Amino acid sequence: MRNKSKLTTILIFICGATLLMSIALAFKSCTQTNQVVIDMSEVQLIQLDDIQEGDPIAIVKTNLGEIRAVLYPEEAPKTVENFIALAESGYYDGTYIYKVEPSICFSAGSKDSNGLSEIDFEAENQKAPVEMSANLWPFRGAFCTLPYQDELSFWEKLRGQTKEYTSSKFMVLNSINFDEETKNALLEANKSDEIANAFIEDGGIPNFSQVYPIFAQTYEGFEIIDKITAVEIYLEQKNNKPKEDIIIESIEISTYMK
Image (cartoon, rainbow, N blue to C red; front, side):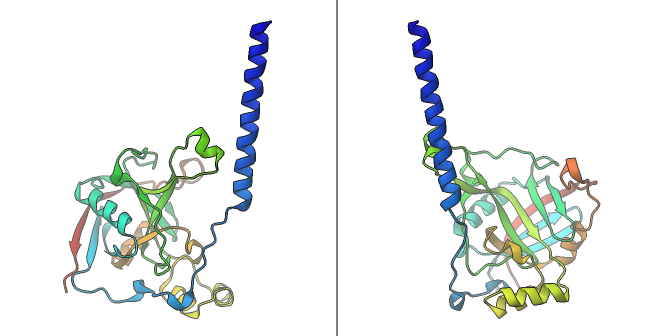
């Protein structure tokens, strides 16, 4: 009888704790917002500036060609630091471009061709804080990190805490099709004509604005981005995996020279 009473007490405690956690998570989901308030008068669209001699760059060599991008350590210091450390260690050598959204973007930096390689939570150069910059926008050729949530303890979940980081995997953007209807909708919805016109003239994915952290911008190799986002892919259960392997042979870190 005593054991039965003890078991009942334990079950009541578990049910009560589960209910409290559910309430906390529900409250968090109802109150938390991802909206970012940006003072458009302060925004500098540095991706539209000409690259300068001495700027840090990444040379991404794939089996389909080479992409060169300027890095932005002032806007995303820890992200760029981690990316450079991984590249210089040879981490990206032989990794895969594992997912392609036709004409839109591709995801890269996985140790396996399905993009399922696990993140090493213990490795400091495998994660960085999510660094969003009002000066960086998802224009065509932007390099974005792919945020993930680290494992949380019971009490962290109960308090509605999050541990969001950016990993070694990254995404390179191409562009949506800006037909007249899309152009007009963008101009009507955007508070900045400068940003709207930049998307219309240079391409990109407006819906990704202030969603994915950006740390670099392509300045050479746009035709390679076109080539990669035009490959044949497996749909449905294979999650847009390229039918033929696309390999990152290496990523070299250097400085821009005219």
